[in-house]
Structure formats: structure tokens, C-alpha cells
Amino acid sequence: MLKESKIGEYKMPGLNLVIGDKDGKSYSKKLEDHSVLVGRKIGEQLKGEIIGISGYEFKITGGSNDAGFPMRHELNLTGKKIIYARKGVGIKTRYKGTYIRKTVAGNTVGQKTAQLNISVEKAGKKSLAEIFGKASAEQKEAKEEKGEGK
Image (cartoon, rainbow, N blue to C red; front, side, top):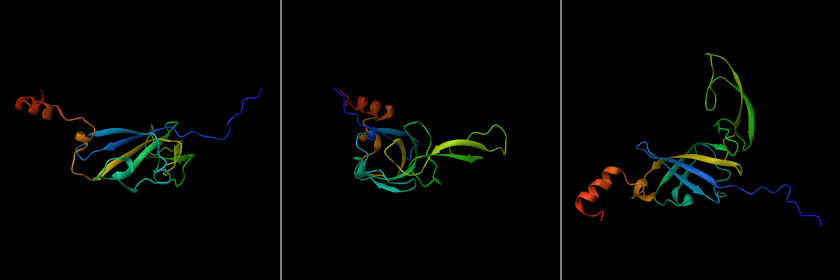
């Protein structure tokens, strides 16, 4: 018996969203189905309802693909490309002015995008700490002092 092979099919892995808040803290959210984000580019605005956080507006700031290559805003493609660069995202030079050949990902979210960095442009009514259940230690102490904690 021959087994049926599924050559050419690519199952989209989950997308890890890293949300940068204006207070400097970041929060992580895993999206199982990120087909609504495919085709979006670095610098685009997102409504929070798309990713399940209503009342917020976000901006795509970067990310990386499933192999860990960073996304660069000047490459208009979804795949990888080898570039020759002196500085920028994903480039570390040893000496000033030297160029490096480096593989990087394009600026468009695709099926193989594993991580997407977004920042808050417009905040909603609830803070992200409340939404993700990560209230700060100061807030927890204040609740315990008032007797609300127990």
C-alpha cells in the first residue's frame, strides 16, 4: 500500500503577536489562525477587533519568519532574500562602514511569518495589563490592603 503524500501543502503555524504598550511593557498573544493578517505590511494600522482586542488600534512594527530571519521594511515581498547592507535591522558589523551579506525576510506578513511585533497607536478603555491578566505588583498590593484580594 502506498501512503498518500501531501507534497506542496503547508500548514500555517500559529503566529505569536508581541504587543508593545506605550508604558514600555510588552504582552504576548498566540493566534492560531492568522489568515486575516496575511498580506499586511510593516507600518500598516490594525483594528484591535481583528486580533481579539476591541477598542485598540495597532501599528505593525516588525517581526520574523519561521526560520528566525527578521523582517525589513524596505523589502516588498513575503519570502526571504539575501541583501548586502551596512546597517539596519538584522545587521551587526564589526567595523564601521563594512557591508555584510545577510538573509532577511520581506515586509509582508505571509504564511511562514512566526512572530509579529505591533505597537499601540490608540488605547482602549481597559488597559492591556487588565486584558492579559497581568496586573502590576503595586495594583495587587493596593487591592490586598483594601481587602479586595481575598
